[in-house]
Image (cartoon, rainbow, N blue to C red; front, side, top):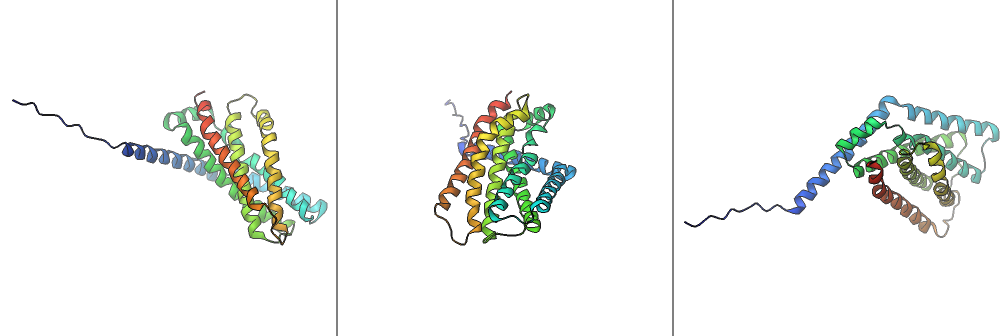
Length: 240
C-alpha cells in the first residue's frame, strides 16, 4: 500500500513581513497615543512653555520695542532652541525605570524610538506655530513672505526636535543627564541654528537668494541622518 505524501502548507514570506510591519505600526501608534494622552491630561509642558515664550517675548518688547529684522530672526531661533529643550528633551528623562521595563516587554527598541521622534516632532511643530504667533503679536511682523517663514519655522522646529530627542535618548542612560546633553548638544545644535538663521533670512527679502534649495536639502539630509542614527544606536541603549 503506497504511503500518502503529507503536503505541508507553503507560507509566503511576505505574509510574515506584512504581519510584523502591521504589528510594529500598532505599537508605534499606541505609544504615540499614550504620550498624547499624558500630555493632554497633565498639560505641564504646554502651559509652561507658553508662559516662557510669552514672558520672554514681552520682556524683549519692553526692553527694545520692535527690533530690526536680523535681531527679530535671531531672537526667534534662540527662543525656539529653549522651547525645544523644555518641550522635547525631557521626553526620555521623565520615563522611570519601571515604565521603561514595561515598554521593553511590550514593544521593540525601533518602535519606541520612532514613536518618541514622531510625538516630539508633532509637539514641536505646534510650539513653533504658537511661538511665531506670539512673536508677530508682540514684536511686529517684519516678514516680506510670511508663508515661506512659516514653512521654514516648521522645518526648523522638526529638525530641533529630532536632534534633542536623539540626545535625550542617549543622555537618559547616563547619570549626569543634563550635563551630557549640554556637552553633546553644543557642537550639533550651533551649526544647525546658523543654517536655520541663514535659510530664514530669505523671508525678509523680496528677492530669493541663491543656494536656498541646497541649504534646505542639507537640513533635510541632516534630519534623515539623525533619524537613522537614532534607529541604529538606540537598540544598544535599550538593552542596558
